[in-house]
Length: 103
Image (cartoon, rainbow, N blue to C red; front, side):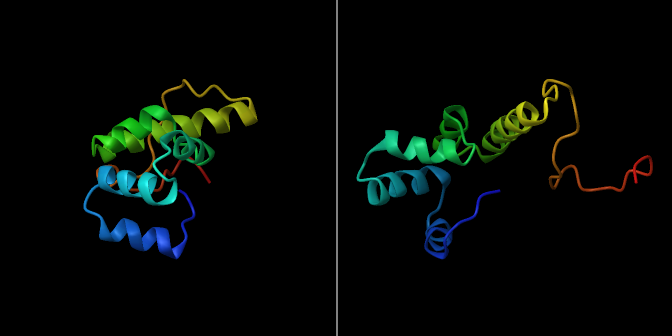
């Protein structure tokens, strides 16, 4: 999750695809400087691979890649093994269910 300004949120709503949003944002907010935009993305835990998925309008792969990045950063901070297979975040295909084995 990333906090967005109202202006950014409205821009996202106006464009038709992630690739169009990226192109417009790099052009309008970063004067065409893709490297500066990539630095901003990294500060939001969006790596280059996830960025490439957005450029290809593959939102599902983008989410998967960003999830890996977020898990990796959290894992490093808490000293956990992030390579363990754990359930993914809740999605429309994997809705939340209460696990009776946990409090």
